Structure formats: C-alpha cells, structure tokens
Length: 229
Image (tube, rainbow, N blue to C red; front, side, top):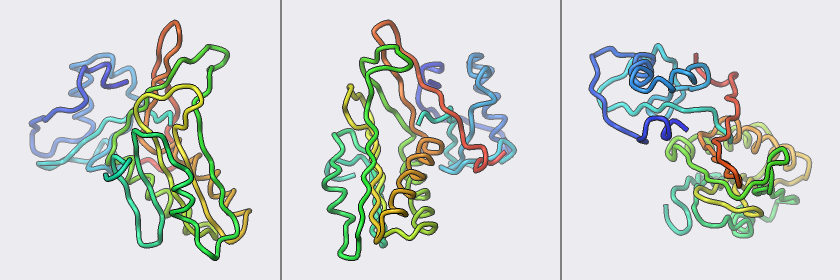
C-alpha cells in the first residue's frame, strides 16, 4: 500500500544527526500527503526491530514504515533453521507441507498438526480472482522465528515450522503453512492455532486482493500489546 502511494519501495535519505524515526515519518508525510492519513496505523522499525517514533537513528540504519499486516536455497527465498529443528521460510513456490512434516517429525512425536491457509473465492460475497502477497523479507523471517521459538518455550511441543508464500496466488492455492509436532495432540493443536494467529498479527506480510471489478490492499490490525510506542 505504501509503495503504491510513494511510487517506490526503498530509498536512501541523508539526515541531521539525532533525527528521530518520527521525523523520518513526517518527512515522507510532507512529500506524500496521503501517507499522513495512515499515521495512526503505520508502525516503524529500525534495523528490523519494532521501534518507538522517539528513537534516534545513526548512519547506516535501515528504517521501515510498515502498514498493518493482513497478515535461500532450493524453493525458499530465505530460511531460518535453528539447532532445535524449528524451521521458518519464505517462498514463491507452492508450499510443500509433506516435506515440512518429514523435516520436523521425530520418533518421540505422537502428533503432528498441519495448518494450511488457502485462497478462497470471495470476501464478504465479492468474488475474488487472485491475491498478491508482498513482505518486508528480512524482518518477516526474523519475526516468524521469534514467534516460533516463543511458542516452543510455552507449549510442550517438539518442533514448529512456518512458511509463507509470496507473489500471486489463485483460488485454492496455499498461502501459508504452520506445522507443529509434539508428543501429544493437545499442545500441537494449541501451538498451531496460536502460531497462525500471531503470524497474521505481527509478521510484516501484506496482501492485495483482486476482484473482477477492482483491487484493494487488505488492512488488518497490529497487535498493540507487543509494539513499542
């Protein structure tokens, strides 16, 4: 959405020493007045961390303006796999949930829960033709990994994987998968549900929904409980 407003996805900016993130936002709001209309819903990130508008920047910092989320090698654009066996990735290829299950499953596991979100054919009765997904890739991967590790610390599960697809998807195609293994079924179900809920609230991924008579970026809502103010 912001890229549509500004006509660009990134640029370099020279600033006075001690400039704040809020001043950076104000700079772009003056250049692109429509941006100011979204002041209350846009959050800022500094070096891939949610940040307060009062924070100051230093030379070489990367700053991102993020509208509300809607929600490597091989097939993956980027991936994170840690020593515990958790796996997080972005891809522009169809999501292979079978390979994810094989990657995670261990002999001590007695349950595996595989949640897959797919593109439906309508929104509130308005026929959908296809969706486009874009994201802030480095921060999306980092945030998915943080969510997964927090869930693994909170639930008695084995391993968790999260994969989100980017690009264009048509009705019936999978856009996101959350796979959880565990010795018992209850925590596997609970962790998978909490995983997709947190992913949709926190990971900077956005979707544009295309209809026969138009298109719109879908706005969700930031999880205010975890964002800096």
